[in-house]
Image (cartoon, rainbow, N blue to C red; front, side, top):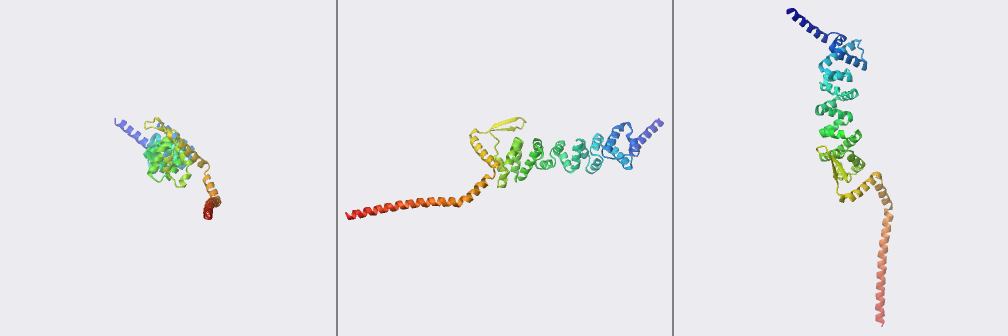
Length: 312
């Protein structure tokens, strides 16, 4: 019995020594380490690491310990990121491994390079948040910082180009009410709202606000919205306002396509203002003189009529 006990102890000691101090390829040669060996060989080839050199041996040992500590997630992260994943994990913790393991190579590399943004997004929103970072590079973090979980819905709904416009107008919306109104409109009607604001963006420079533009927003006789249960709802606008919306829409469209028309009109007015005023003044003085002549003739007629009466 004692001899069997000593044999078991020796086996345990040998395993411990092999995990901590044996050469890397001896470690990789064990049956349970086949996947580890393949991962290390793959990573070394991918990132140009010479395993036969001293640095390569050190990498292999560290990689083996890293995979032992983090399991399959560590293995996938190592193959995607390379040796840097071990440094990032030592600095930021296990969440780095989870983030990188949950994504393909290019996506994992992007998130690893932007780990300072990816970590808080991952911890608050999970994979949906990091997926949004991949869909909207450089824009997802400010979107989520401003709008939280609703920002996830906006980012999923919009294209990168449309999201850029959304963030632009969100920055121009000075009040929380303006930002919330913009968010609600975009969640209900998507790109249509942003296209409307983009066509009318020149009005912002003229003193209008995002909120006032949204108050003027009309999306046709029929608007399609999404209800709280996810079902599509169609709402018909009052028919009495069709003519007014048509006239306003025509005017706005004309100004959008030809914004220089008011400037040309003003220039023409300034150039012809003096002749126009002179013409108007001449017409008025002519009318006044005509009345004066008519009045003088009446007076003369009365005087002649008085003289004739005195003579008789």
